[in-house]
Length: 455
Image (cartoon, rainbow, N blue to C red; front, side):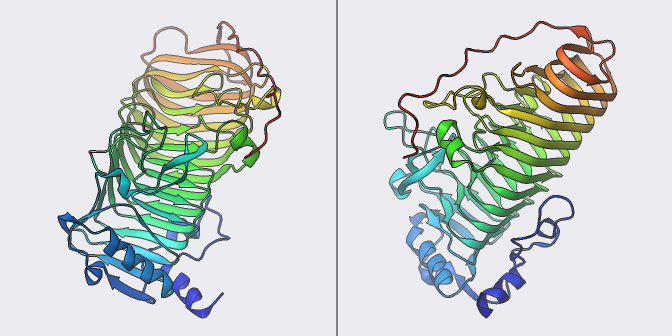
């Protein structure tokens, strides 16, 4: 590593590849997007106007490119409304937005180049994000400015061509990224999308939009903390690919920590895990968050036969849950999400799910505490705990096909019917459970003919 790069990483606080994100994490606690070395470039010096009418794409991109080729530093966006198409951040570059600066996405889809993009767990043809980076390390977006998508680009995918529309922020194969303080607003497409990234921090952001807030897709070591979400779909969604393509690539999402966030969802869940889980999802920690509204369940963990892989080691602690349309927590491993054109066949295609733990949960008038009924009998959930729960709910818990359950200190009131209904469940804290009918899964998935080849 060169002296200049070491200096940049030291002052930027981004050179932390080996630091684990779970527990006491230097990345979470100390990382700042600040630089005192490297160049400092102002987009106005490259011809940016910021009058909300002139397209400033070229000027913004020239400033970003020059910063990267000169070894890194900051690109400053002063006050103004900058109409822009897609722009890309290069190595060791921080894009810093003045509090009175807005990057406004162009309404013209031709301003977002086409590439291979990830969409619902598959690589397809699509438009790159408004702000993107690929194969870039030690980068960031900072400042209290705004990043806004165009309201004129409707939908997530072109219905005639199948081409995916542009995300607001999209990072692919990037390492050591920090995004902090900015306000984002997306239209119909996903807002912030990470694919194959490592060592990522989102901090103190406001994430608004009519789709998912942050999608973490086959990434390692991700921290999301002190953020405020007001979205139309999952506030945060964890994914890792779909079907034989995702399973063959085999890149999991792992080591994710979500702390001190506030969630409001209008259509789905506050935190969704799945349903694209074919690369696996593991080591997720959620703590001290407020789930203020959700159309379905505040926490929704989902997959289906044909995904394969695993969901394991999920721990959520100290959650406040209110305004949930259907309940606090749901598992669905039987039929969630679209089936892939080439699913993972046989018993190996049924996801392995184990060690899902929830503690210190406070619920307020949730319609149901836990819907844990859609679990495949051929692969029961191995290890589930729910402890120290208080508040009010309309119904209790339905659990099926679970091994090593642990229910303890559940003190909820207001529910009708039994607190606990079970089928094929063993463990502790099950006293007083009433039986519930078994579920019948779909027929096993046959192997593809001819055999699947990644291409």
